Amino acid sequence: MYKGFNIFPPHATDFYKTGHIKQYPAETRFVYSNFTCRADKLAKVLGDVGGVRPFDHKTVFFGLQGVIQWLLIDSWKSEFFNRPWDSVVSKYKRRMDSSLGKDAVDVSHIKALWDLGYLPVLIKALPEGSRVDIRCPLFTIQNTHPDFYWVTNYLETQISAEIWKPITTATTAYEYRRLFSHYADVTGAPREFVQWQGHDFSYRGMSGIHDATSNGAAHLTCFTGTDTISAIDYLEEYYDANDGSIVGGSVPATEHSVMCMGGSDDEQETFRRLIMDTYPSGIVSIVSDTWDFWEVITGFTRKLKKEILNRDGKVVFRPDSGDPVKIICGDSTAPVDSPEYCGAVECLWQVFGGTKTSKGYKVLDPHVGLIYGDSITLERARTILQLLEAKGFASNNIVFGIGSFTYQYVTRDTFGSAIKATAGIVGSEFRELYKDPKTDDGTKKSLRGFIRVEKEDGKFIVYDRQTEEQEAAGLLAPVFMDGVLLRRQTLDNIRNLINEGK
Image (cartoon, rainbow, N blue to C red):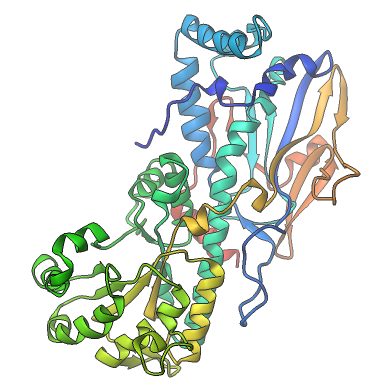
């Protein structure tokens, strides 16, 4: 079971949140907030170029169920509710006193929460796997006990910090899959190859183990290729991804330390040993640019051609430096007919040949392939597939390693993700809350009051200023209440919803 860092949950917030209990008006008893992706102007998505349908201003909702289980249930229970009060209060009070000043924060409300024994909040959400229109809420959160109105937005920081990234990653992965599917259709490549064409290479470039794990899980909502082992554990634990379907898979692969250890003078022997002795069958991926990639792709391949073609499997060559577009597709500024001019795919075709798809595009002999995972972006991947198509090659001649250059070059602002309060009760008075800064461009203008979400003509539509009865009738359904998970989705269910939401 993936646990992650056992943080003390009351500390998993901003200091300024600790004083809000005193700042709300007297007799406040209810706070109602929502999570919305408010804008996509900073998002790195597909534009209207090259025949691919442009981004349709929808995000893929994923990650809340995992956050609820490991954070709102497991972490709060093990590190707060199940710990002796003396240890809880001493830890909380010491931090508040040392950082904000002695007795700056009264701890009586923390004691009351500990006595209660659970988080008194209700979260209502759309189904994970939904492709939700920008500016439409994905979930709401509200307190269920009038004494704990302060809990709703006390949890904002920790929930926001954990949920924006998997939503952003799942949306980005969907964009990659749309791109690969488009070129598969154009060039006649098999659609079943697409789920393996985007391979998660991001782990070492993420912001820690937990980030890499939840990010890797989000990648697997749209693909099955991954090198992030713990992402599969996460999906098994929190999304029941162990019912016989493929969650994620990989292949044996080398790294530069392996190739260097064999020595530069005998690199060809290292290749021979790997493909004949270590992995005499199946797929093996070999990093090929340790010294001279072009010698590997045009020299070693010819010398080992017989051995490669006699293997029951595929040797995948992995360039890992230079301009990925030029390495794969060729450099028009290089000497004509040189390996650099031709590019890796054409070089392998010259050595091994292959077949053609039903649409007439060339596919390399199944004994060889290519994967590139250095600094890949959506734009570079599209350019590579465009150029391969122009050269007469099908899209399934290349697998892309999607790494931190894609999944880490993002922020909460990529999709304007935010949790904001829109309703409250003070005494017996219901109040609609909203913000509409004159100094903003409209992005931060919030909804007002209770919220209802419906789906109309394939789009999620939000209605605000609703009655309590109207709010209850919408698509936002209870998923968590008073420490209990109420709805549990499987990875298969989420993948199916993503597929249906095209």
